[in-house]
Length: 206
Image (cartoon, rainbow, N blue to C red; front, side, top):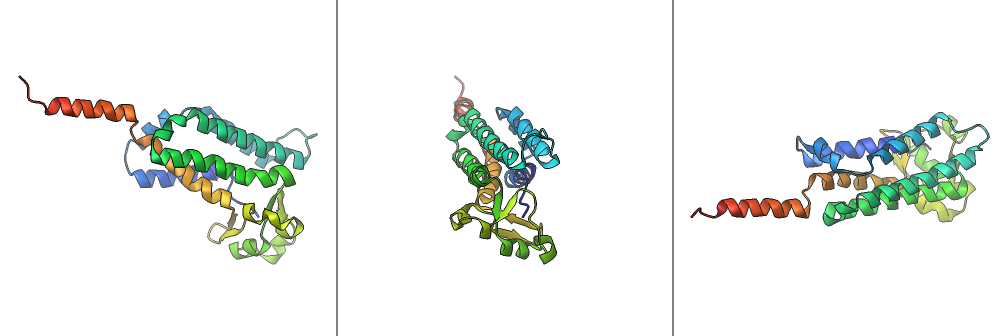
């Protein structure tokens, strides 16, 4: 059943990151991110995907497969452009979790043309038997595919939000939150300049 869309995966970790850092100039620090246009591109693809704005001659399964592949390419490109964040521990985690979570969510869609989900998980999330009588567009029951897909499927119910999350989602949330934290942390060069200024001001004048 419906898991969080890409826009939700961007917004919620952003809020979490702001809470973690709890500094007034966090938003300013995000300007250091490179490839911000890729975020806009993902948002546009998500909008096209949700609203069904792909060309009519593109079959639904082909559309979902193309979307999943494009999202992986964009995630990898974004992480590569921001590889300077690797100097921070939070940056290393972010640049590892984001592509890993994206690939985890995209592989089953690219292969099956739909995201496998657990019916019991969807029921635990709050969906009624009537709602589960017909699969939502872009989703396929785990019972209808190989059990090898279980680790990547939507399994984890979140009743409050009526969502069923996958392992990929759980990797993306902290990954995106840590990306924000890494942006706020000063780079090694900035720390060197700051230390030099501090040491210089601490020395007595002749």
